[in-house]
Amino acid sequence: MDKIRMVELHQNPQVVRYFIDFARIASFTLILLALASVAGLVYEIPLLAGIFPSKYAMRGSTAVGFILIGLALLSSLNQNQYAKRISLSLSSLVLTLAITNIMQFVLSINLGMNNWFIRSTLDNHQTLARRMPLETAIAISMLGIIGILTVLKRILWLRETCAVLVLAIAMLTLGNYGFSLDQMEQEVLVSNT
Image (tube, rainbow, N blue to C red):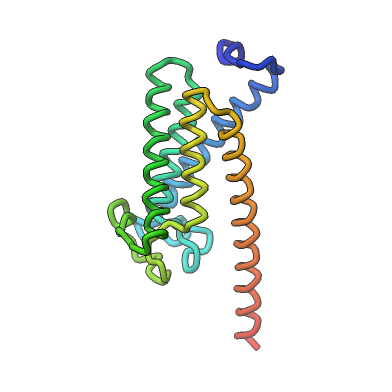
């Protein structure tokens, strides 16, 4: 009940409780999916590395970012100062990881960051070998910003804007992924004829 009273705006406590439960479920899901992908990459299990690992294996830095995001979200649900500091630190790490990946694109360099985290042969086919996709890096940087602003309780409009942009990027990425699956299916049909 303590968490429900912490709401600054006059909101429905039942709705707040649902959002807290949803955030907890989302953070555990994100952590478990990232850990499964890490296990798939480390132990060379294609089924765990990605949905279609021959085309779409999760990068090591992306998995590390997802784990950090999930842990930051979990710690932000606790209201003591120690948990807030942990959440702020994890969100700052997420932002640093994402900005470093974005800078690789801007400067046209590859620091090999994924080799720092996880070495795997499951994603060697990619032209930008082992680099986090740009749209993923942008979305993860926004999630880091959201985490920082949530703990600091500042600049609400920026936090909400970042949240909407993360959703837009996720929807566009899913659409692109669906289009890619359609293209793969058409290639298979053409090669079988």
